[in-house]
Amino acid sequence: MSTRRRTPSREPRLRPQQPVLERRRLAAADLFAQGLTAAAVARRVGVSRQSAHRWYHAWQAGGVQPLRARGPVGRHRKLSAVQLDQVEQALLQGAGAHGFASNLWTLDRVTEVIWRLTRVRHHPVQVWRILTQRLGWSLQRPRRTAAERDQAAIDHWLAVEWPRVKRGRAAAAPGWSSWMRAVFL
Image (cartoon, rainbow, N blue to C red):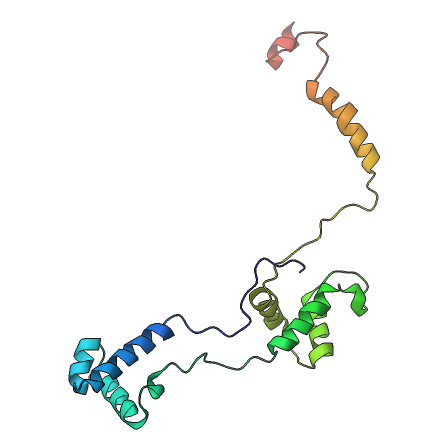
């Protein structure tokens, strides 16, 4: 994990249908204000009468505020935006700066750094979600090269030997396309 593809919003997102449903409820509130009954509003807005009645009672009790969307649903995040910024800055320093033998990040190492900085424990799957969804990082794998690799020898082979191999055999004798001919001659 090392590069960022995009800069995602660090705020919790609304479910895609929440704004649409909120507009429908607010349209129903406008119709209630015009004096229409809950049954008439249900027909106009395209919802069940039970929903329209529930909205009507909520509208009577508190106006349009109870009909507004409540915002993101689900469990609250363990890491705040400030803590997430701290974690990201620590990750950008590299794994070696945090006492690891190599400079490669693994999910277990990132989990450990999150714990050291924030005292919040996460499962590696959740750490993956934090890295990819909240921070916008992508998976990066290091290129593997042999320790014995001799780049000068490789360059020489590509420049000198490969063209000779590519040309093929010397044209000393004509080649045969059939093995039978070579046997019977």
